[in-house]
Image (cartoon, rainbow, N blue to C red; front, side, top):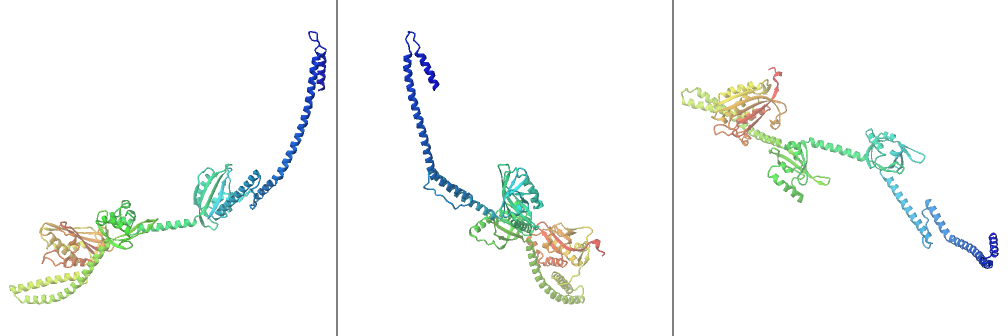
Length: 636
């Protein structure tokens, strides 16, 4: 400033001594203005000094005021902040009993107190949730775990509930951070050998799989027992690249045992159903067949595929077929069913249209909440035949006993008639009419004696001696006797198999059988040209000849088959021809005992006789006698 003033003074002095171009001096004017400027400068300086002083005063006052405000503020806020800080510290240390006042506080302090209350409630809720999860994990009937597959290839378990013996204690160790280091190879040794490949696949895909998994494995217990566990787990990839599998492994040993028992029970049930000799059919509420067993297939002649899905009325003849759906609907509506829970004898129909008698029992089980019907079917055709044979045998036995008693008495009455008449005849001349009449009496009496023998044969009133015989030879002997009684228009043809064995038989009675059947055949042929064919063949018992229904024992037999070209007979007549005193002949042509005697003779030989015939188709009589010994083994 001093230098500036000096330079200004020098400049003023210079200007004061300087003259204008017109010769006048200009210094006075300059000086005058200079003094005025200098005065203004001094005044400005004084004003600046005053202003600077005022700024210092204001600054010091502001600081003082700010300090006062800060002091007052700190005095009113710091206790609240300290209280919040202490509360947070206690809350972090687990003390959830502490609480803060949230009303009557400065705005920001109030917000902080409210935030603390929310934090406290959230922590309490989190603790409660954590306790619930821990309780659930503890109470779950299995192992709850988190298995982590690290990117370095190691495996650890960081969470498991108390039931962790399989997943943790037996196959892992604890590392320096408290994790259980899991050993998959050691774990695999605990598995059943058949399940180890499954575990290998799980480990192989653990780092790449993104889908939940469910699998079952068997574990070998320390005592050597086997336990089944079902594992349900879900993966999620962590930020560091590890893959964590959260899961639960449930002990399903009891369930598996039950399943195995059910499978075994089902297998036994299926075996029983498949091997049962009775048919088993199940239908639904609409009468649609759902299952059939092999026996039902055999009984009705259908394959399973032909029956399943069809209405069960398919197996019934009319009119039951048309009425069945109505019966079923009525039962479902009213519950009135005569056959449910009991058995009845009905008529069934096979695939070929043949009807047959059957026993049917129906039950009403519920399967999986569905109302079903199960029918047990038995083909009683054979039983009916046997029952008819039994009734026939009982009837014949009764008639035979009666006839036998009468025959004995009649034979006793005939003996003196014949004897005395023959004595009288011997005393009469041959040309005497009386002699001729008495000869007729003797002939009639002898005919009565023959009838007596037939009756006794039928009634088995006489003992019979059976000897080993070769049937073709016996048949030939009978044919030689039969030919003499046949008309010339009836021819006899024979056909014998080679190398036949022997049967135990009474040759005389076999002669009577052949002659009797031959005489009936000739009568059926009548005056027309006809043929009688006699065959002798070895046979085995088979379904075709229905040995069981004929009452024959299993084993080889010799068959004598006599067929003719006569007028035949209907089924009703064929069923009665062996009845005593049943005949289709006119009066004086037969007495109805011939075929009854034939059946009695065959029965005495432990054999059977069967007839097959139809009107205008002739008749075929088949006689079966048990083989006694093969010819190669016989030394007679």
